[in-house]
Image 1 (tube, rainbow over the protein chains, first blue to last red):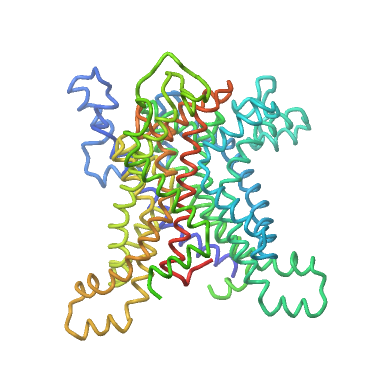
Image 2 (spheres, one colour):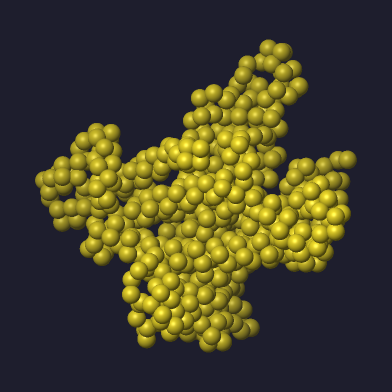
Length: 338
Length: 279
């Protein structure tokens, strides 16, 4: 029963995934100018360009090129980065944990503060707390992440000296922990290396906070709305009438129900986060896939950019699928309707 | 109650919206008259490089001795202009596509639905990056990319609004009086959907400004030495760690203020046009 539902969800995600692949294919073929001339370099003769056109398969009809592209994808071949000289897939795989660690921590911060703010605001609608939360949420979504990040660097690194220099995942005095998950926090904890853990956490704090503030607004807004609706519903009134403690009422009865619609907004929040991630990585010289793509873009090195867009698309579809499944697991009503 | 009286009522009740209107007027003034008002040439370098804010240079000077205040004011036209152009494109295409999908249904609806789903399958800023990288690093492509990533929101809102009016009395009446499908769609449905789409413009304008500035921050679209908020923050970023905060701070502040203004304005405008959705 449950397995069938999972399969159904997976099947529903397939057309979207196909869309992602088609779009990325079209992006590779829409390279500025003539891709063959581009790969041949400025000094190439006309014969050399034609030769490359044939090797690249660019003289084939579009649908054949698409099949070629699918074949390459199936073999995990995303091309070679001109800047690093490495296969794009290897580069991306090596840098993905850095981005994932940062984004997940940002999401955790946003979820914690956003839900708390939403609940506090909903318990006293119209009060100054409510207005304050609304102001913070609107301001948070108006802040350009690259600007917030730089402000943090100025205040916490230059003025106060609390944060380390914004130069990547570890300072110059630490060495990365033995590779297990690629997440420095987890790996250093596994290795029992408190010093590296502290160093990694210090580097992570500002960029994760920057991301968290940006993603906080939609979560806070949604929690507030959902909590307001739940708090005025009959079962809460009944629970209140039967003399349940306010704490139990709010946290166990109301919040659990209010969190359901919040889970559905996570998809949008993730879209924001994954996009903002690129900007934050650039500000903090974070060695993730976002800064990899930006560096490649500036060097007109297109294979990494396309690999990056494809990876992000696939990741985003997968995450949305997971959110969907989580939603079904939390809310039995959805299962019955489906 | 007339629209004007209603608008006045909403503004009086919500002073924040009134403040947003004032900020909006300031931004528009800077965009229109900025270049003729500023004290210095925004592109002219001087020998007073990296000077902190002072009476002569309110926002200080950058690494080439250019006046940051003049550059911030002049940039308003470009930043607002790019976002506005993108919104104009998506307003036209998104509304028409959404109304067609919602009113005609059938395969039109399915095709447009598939297009919006595919766009939304990507994190939007990442898709914009990919589009500009593929189509070429120009200002026009930044505008097109911003329009494309906003298309799903517009098409979806227009689709819903058209769909709920499909069976409305005035539509039936128009049909019975012998008007064709296309005519009903253009003369009856479209005018009713437009006000809500206008609100959508002000709601998404802030996001569009953030998006274009973000793209130029990573080096797409605008090239130096043009004055634009995103690229000015990028130019000032390197000086933050050595304490010259003003180069990145003031353009960033202007950017934030512009986005904040449009977000507040959007909420206020929605209250005026569409009272049902008041929060």
